[in-house]
Length: 156
Image (cartoon, rainbow, N blue to C red; front, side, top):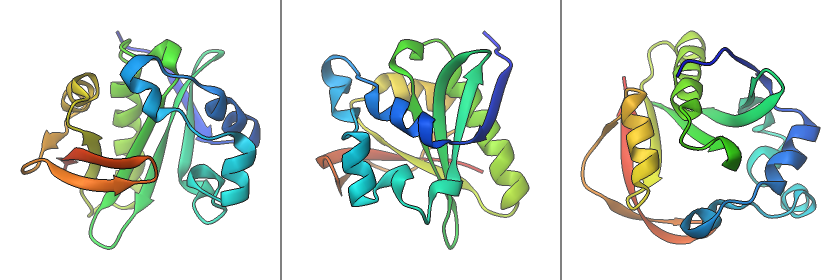
């Protein structure tokens, strides 16, 4: 399904909302620390140096998610978070397409990549539908929520 998503730089109120999202079952590892804890530690979208990289997405009045577009030396990293109530409805694909368009406008010569846990088949399917391809073999990566096995996915 195609949605008419609107986006803008993430606001402080939206950061509080995202911190309150609770994912079920195996996806609970994506639950964020409290807004206060993130603000105190200056992590993720609470890091003042990276706050401008985060875009919020709406389908009319529904806050469906956000993306992080982070320029690196050779590439652009894309991170995505979807409202738990909006998962598996096609929003992720559209947010990634818009993120791709924004990235190509800002950094036209740089390919995009993202990282996804190898067990998260739902996310892998979403990313593939959005034009990303698995690049190489799975690898282990230490994150702020522990060690995991990831795929690197790219879109040129």
